[in-house]
Length: 349
Image (cartoon, rainbow, N blue to C red):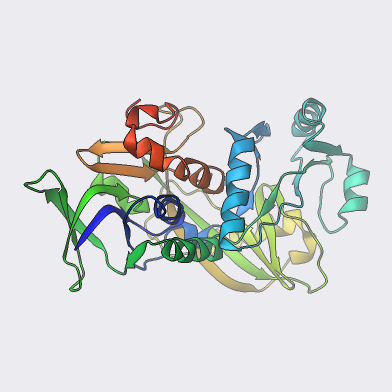
């Protein structure tokens, strides 16, 4: 079997890459079917990050790329705003300053104003309203993007990457755990393998961080925007919210744990008191790969060559929605000219 580009992994990075490349070349996606970090994510879109609400890297372009991705895959992107309750008076002052600096994108809500606008959300110190914020269902988005990539010519093989080696003609021989296509000859192998990337590209500076989310039952008449505080609460559908996420740097199991679930339940109730004692509908967990801030300020992802004919697209961490669509759309030009990759994310920098 032959393909110009083999993409190993069908999470958010792999799906975005397949969609971007399919119109230009022959693409084969290896999808092993195992749920990864994309499966556990809540899909919070927040262009003002962290305790100091700093503007995300290339946020305007990133939001535009995400909007185009959602439109092309016909998945609703809910960007009606996001509420960030201040944790204390110190953070409230930072939020007020941010709102003054970005009046077109942010609005400061006093405790009374926040309570009036969003009575179900607890914000005793006030809250920052992020006009560009919102959410999207990542598992649904990934599935739809992969489907659209197929429509544009990409092939999907349900198999796991088993390895690769150099061919006599300068092309790679990619091995898959598939009786249908045990060997695939290709010009480029793109690793979008999530947690498995550390073993496949051991020289990359990557850290594992486990994240758990919960889906909770909610009153059917609960009306809240996406809320991001000490954790987040995102409305999925009437009577259902998703709560997240943990950031576990030390863990012994990849499965959801009762301790993390209880922590998330408490966070949910602290932000939205009516969720106190809410029933758990589902618990999910996944491992994110992130780049240490000591290596790359801002913990930005990594994209670029890691060996002859082999590239990696990894380290998205908790910023996948604001990085994967943006970076993927540049893949056709960057594969032709690796030196053009933005140095902030390039594996060559």
